[in-house]
Amino acid sequence: MELYTRDLILRTVTQDDLKEIARMWEYPRETTIDQAREALRYMEDTHRKNRPKAICHLCLGVFQKEKPDVITGWCGLDGEAEQGKTVLFYVIEEKYRNRGYATQCAVELLRYAFEDMEYDIIYGGCAKDNTGSYRVMQKAGMVQSSFYEDGGYIFSIDRERYIRSGRQA
Image (cartoon, rainbow, N blue to C red; front, side, top):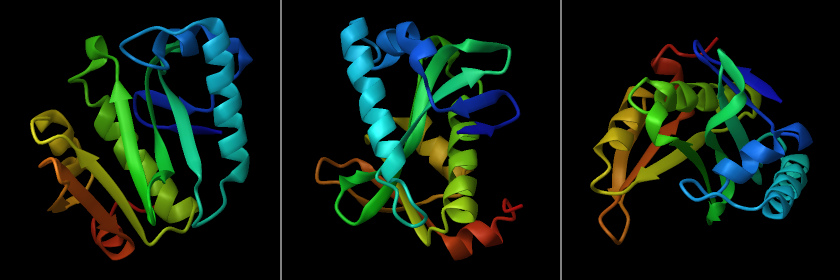
């Protein structure tokens, strides 16, 4: 699977990406090639389970179009993290932050969720001191709707708000 933004390719990683998976899977720590193989198997297994309105876990490598073999982050949609919710997630390697990449990921994943996977609502969240992530979700059209117990922010966007935002194809 591949999704495209202005600057990025969001795609399913493969065996050819094992070294990059090892480097980035537990960012900022590296893992072993064996752990990368396990991560790849996990992603392959969960991707096979994904269906419209029922994403188990979709994890995509974030690649710059100008560096298509280097993982600059991860993004996706997680239907297992919180009971009854599908949650948008992203992490961008520190040296690639503040370039709009997380926002591009969030916008494209919301498009995918609403237009391709027929979702009615998507959630997101961030720590209370993560102002960068807070802004990303706002720019993607999400609304801060409540708080986690630790004070972190919970965001959401429903199909109606997504359509009103004018981002749909």
